[in-house]
Length: 438
Image (tube, rainbow, N blue to C red; front, top):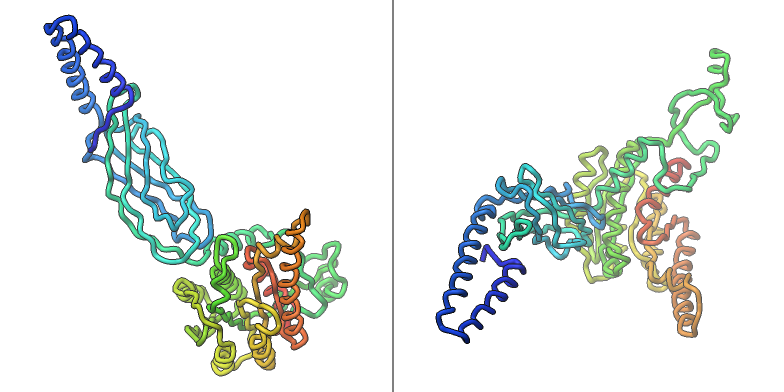
C-alpha cells in the first residue's frame, strides 16, 4: 500500500459515522451520510493527486570510504523527488544491524530542489562485507489527509576494514606538530639517535653538546644539529589469531584491537622509511608477508588484516617463531601481538620469545581486559567487591610475573588497556627507534 490515512482523516471518517444516527428519525436521512462520504472520497482523490508520484523517488547513500573497524562514522542518506519540495518526511534505511546504527529512522523536510538529507552514525564492531537494503520513506502535506509510503531500491555493498581513520588522525597530528598521545614525552638520551637531519638556530633548553661550533663560527650565532632516528630499519608484526584473542575487550575483540594497532604501526614504520612485514598464526603459520617499504606495502598488509579471523585453537609459538627465524635473516624489531596469562600458561611464549631474541629485538604486546582493570580500581564498598578485587589483582599479578620473565630474558614488553593499544604501541616503537636499540 503506497497511501495511508493520516490520523485526522481517520478521526473525520469516524465522526461522520454519527450521521447514521439520523436514520433513527427517518430512512430519508440516508442521504446525509452518503453525501458526506462521497465528499470525503473526492477529497481523498484530490489529496492523492497532490502528493508526489511513487515512481519519481530516488535514493542514494554517501558511505565512508572505507568503513573503519570500531570507529563512529557518519552515513548520509539522500532522497530526491522533483515534486516533493517542501514536504516533511520520515526515512528508514535498511542498514545492517551488525554495523550498530545509532538510529534507523530519520526525519526532515525536502528542500526547494526536492532533496532530503538524513544522517546517522554507525560503529562497526567486526571486519567484513555488509549489504545495505532499500530505503523506506513516508511523506505528507502539512494539514493534508494522506501519507505517501514508498520503498526505494537502494541496495549496495560496503566493507569494514581495519581502522584507517587512525592513520589519517596520526598524519594530521604530525602536520600540526602534535603528539599522538597528549602528555607523553619520550626521552632522547645522548647518542641515541643516529642520523644527521640538519642545522637550526639554538633555542633555550637545547643540549649544549648538540651545538655545531663550526656552523656557529660561520653564522656568528649559536647553531645546533638536529638528529633523527635511523631510517631503513626493519619491523615484523607477528599477529596471534588463537583462542585467547577471541575474548571481547570493550566493543571489539582483542584480535580486532590488535588488527587496528598492527595497521597503524605498519603505516608509521613505512612513513619513517622502515621496511615492515607481517606474520599471522594460530596453531600454525597462516600468512607471511616479506618486509618491504612504501605505501604499497601498507595497502597489502591492510588486505591481509581484512581477512584475518580468530581461531579457537592454541597458538603454536614454536612454529611461528621458527618460521620467522628462517625467513627473516636481517636483525629486525619483532612485535608479537598476543595475550599473556600466568607464567605456566605463557611458558611456550616466554621460552620461544627469549630464543628469538638472540637474533632479533623482540617485543611482546598484550592487552589488559578493561573490565578486569575496572574491577581492580573500583572502590571496595561491600564484601563481594573485595572478592572481585582480589580476583582481578590475582590475574594482573600473574600477567606481571610473565612479563617479568620476559624482561629477565631480554624481551621487551608492553601491557596496556585494549582501547589504548594503538597509540601506546606507536609511542613505544618511536621510542625504540630514538634509542637506536636496533
